[in-house]
Image 1 (cartoon, helix red, strand yellow):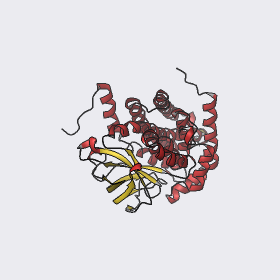
Image 2 (cartoon, rainbow, N blue to C red):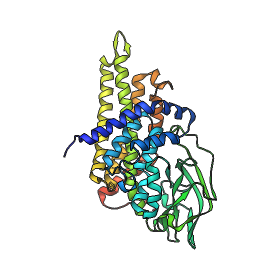
Image 3 (tube, rainbow, N blue to C red):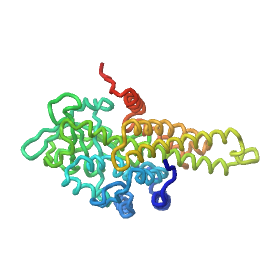
Length: 386
């Protein structure tokens, strides 16, 4: 076991850190203010730097490195804000990886190089008004009509809805009940019958658009099939990497909170000395640091053990759940250390609190992760319906 980064990994991490802090700090403030996503010109800059293809195949323009390298980059951008990090999250750990693992060669060649260059954004569309945690209750349906797939239904809580160029739509592709009838189809934004609801106003996640998607007899080529009916388990397997990305977004927020609180505690004086000299502050900073370091190790374990494959459910769920709970505690402690300044929108801490809470809801709640962990320990899935 080696707990040191290689020279290449350290250089990549430092390159991401320098770029994120030099190029995206002002952008992050603008996205928070306007609630708009990273613009195309900046996504292209990400692409030029290689940040959108770290662990994607070289034949499609990526760097072909492992998941750990991808998460090292993602963490540095998440330390600035989750909004500026989101295109990297989607490319390296999100729906693009589903395309890479399960789509046809033709679809991979069409989508992945455009993502790596920053020209295309892919979003995953899973949840519905009556199907969130109970995802196998989804009602959006697709049917084969000649050489086309025709899809109708309504999707909810799609991050990137209305902004992303293409969507991986989970839908029912056969009459088989439950998971056996579910697969996934790629739907381009410009297809006839695709429309979007009112943008959501969320507590956090500003700069990451979310809205309902309406699909009214939308026709796409049969070649847009990513996973046919019966492939739900494959989709959930790919979701293990998304859990690591989700956890890394939490980690980045917490690491930034620790960094800012540590600096503030040394600069801020009360009763004639820096507040870091008070034992109460020392204990808070130490607890924050322990949680951040523990989270980082859990995430790295899942990524390294997966190499370039897909992380297992146990390790990815442990990493996600711990990070999701950790970020809420660490950012709240950071706010407490900074007092009124932490609560002010002039500083970044209150935004981290708002953004941090969301990751324990997105991508499977912390309670769902705990049932995954228990199922892995026991060796069987639990029936939540009876």
